[in-house]
Image (cartoon, rainbow, N blue to C red):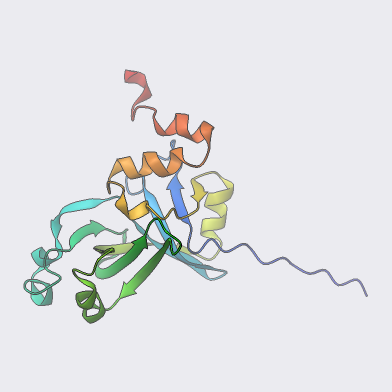
Length: 188
């Protein structure tokens, strides 16, 4: 019997999705998405470079006062735009124990414990990006996204379009050229 094994699609969880330079969708143009989950059922992640220029405390309620009130707030994506997701990271650069640890979707109590710890950063996101089963795979095949590894210095880069330029430019020399193209090539 000649049984054919279907290969499992590669999971890109833990990778970055970098918007292709020609992507014009205003919700994802020049974005960098941290893909936190990806399996046959779909995928989800958060847009890292859409700062809202306000802090978590501006939402009021439990965040108005206390240790999380000054955490920067970002637009995480179009799905569940009122939902707050907390993300923390710890990076240690240089030395023998160089590394990067990302904590995604942590609860407010855990986040409050991390405030002020050396080498720890916090961000809050409103909403997230989501893909149904097979949707991300189709977008990857049509070159909507460029997949990149997660660099240890990711969260130290300015969290706006400069992050997109840096991550895309680090993929290879060809993408570096695209990353530095003007937003509107007709004005070049």
